[in-house]
Amino acid sequence: MLGIATGDVGMSRADFSACTPSQFSLILKFHRKKQESKSRESWEQTRFLACVLLQPHSKKNIQPRDVVVFGWEQQKESPNSAQGRNGTKEDFEAAKKTYGL
Image (cartoon, rainbow, N blue to C red; front, side, top):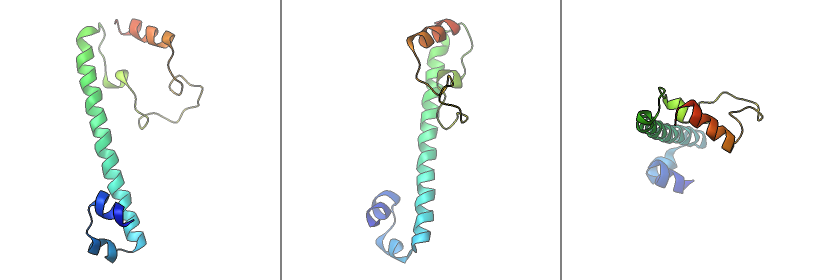
């Protein structure tokens, strides 16, 4: 735990020693939430750039969610739904036709 506190979270040894386990748990929870938020933001920026780069090559207007839908954006769906399964070559060809690629 000390390694996570000092290495990952950036706490001093004194700060870590002064924390109760429940306090450290909350600090760690919010630190991880902040890291996840930064990661999501980075992926969303990447998706936007992909959308901008694909747009000139498509006859239809492409929205960022047309490029990729992230797991945190999906509704809870059954495993047999189209979003919940891996795409096939036929799915890829249909998507190319849909977007004029």
